[in-house]
Image (cartoon, rainbow, N blue to C red; front, side, top):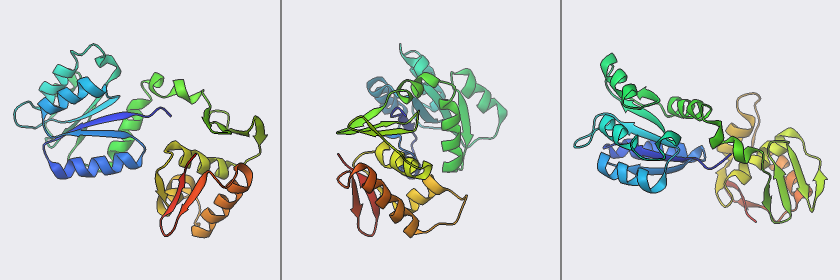
Amino acid sequence: MKLVRVLVVDDEEDILEILEYNLSKENFKVYTASNGIEGYKLAEEIKPHIAILDVMMPGMDGIELCTKIRTLPFSKEILICFLTARSESFTHISALESGGDDFVTKPIKPKVLISRIKALLRRHPKLIDKEKDEPRVFGELEIDYNQYVVRIKQKKIPMAKKEFDLLKLLTSRPGRVFERSEILSKVWGSEVIVGNRTIDVHIRKLREKIGSQYINTIKGVGYKFDF
């Protein structure tokens, strides 16, 4: 998946911290701003794929910021989701009429917001599909995420689905440490009850197939992919 840039604008520091943490765990590149003016400048600079705007902010509120962002020449490529503590329908209507694509009511549930973001991304397949068809190369290792194919020096390596899913997760953010709990959640989910031994076995199998130099163990924490 293409690295998705997310801009979060909210005047509440705790909300910025919570969203930055949870969105980063989903492999989004997160930028934050504490007011509308700063948010607009960041939007011009980073050209976010998604902007998450708080409606009620001092100075330039979220609706005004949205309207201003929609004047940017690349604004059609920006998805905008509002955060609002209000339940009145007129607020939601104003948010959408100003150029917003969706809204989430506070208090925010990170899982709900992430689900909304992923749903919005599916409306703009060019943000994710272009690189979906392009294999990624890490040294002698080549991974085709679309075809579920792994090659070493052009030689196809047989791989079970969970092994591939684990490799896909680790290679999604080279250099980043994935904690065991996160690996279990994202690779195995709630479909079966598995333990840390399951991760270790799959890591061992991956190392046997692609080489031990790619996957590093961070003792007491988890694993990371380097090349």
